[in-house]
Length: 149
Image 1 (cartoon, helix red, strand yellow):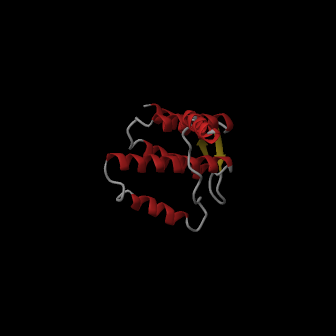
Image 2 (cartoon, rainbow, N blue to C red):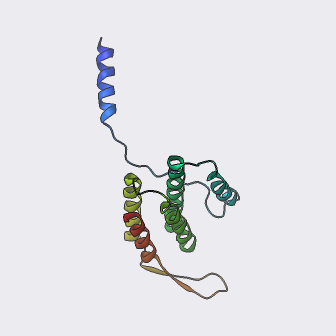
């Protein structure tokens, strides 16, 4: 009898626990030999995920994936690669309906956190090339605006 009571209590507690929206663990990053393969596979998967619901899951999944990629690249100060990943995340996010409020919130929280940690702009110079100024905050604000539309 006490096991039944414990089971009922555990079920009651378990039903009240709400886990927030979780961004994915990062996959292959630029520089890894399978990175290009994963990008090609991402493009090919769009033919598998047809229909409104599956298509939305596909695009939000890619938006999540590229946002996490951008976050990690920003943390490692690989700003040009990070901005490229952020742009891809934005493009995928724009292809979904705005019904995914949990994704909106999770993305905006992450983007605001990055904005608070990153410099407003950064002068990037590749070896043997002219320096370019990267406006990091502008790109992050644009991403936030896309998710607030």
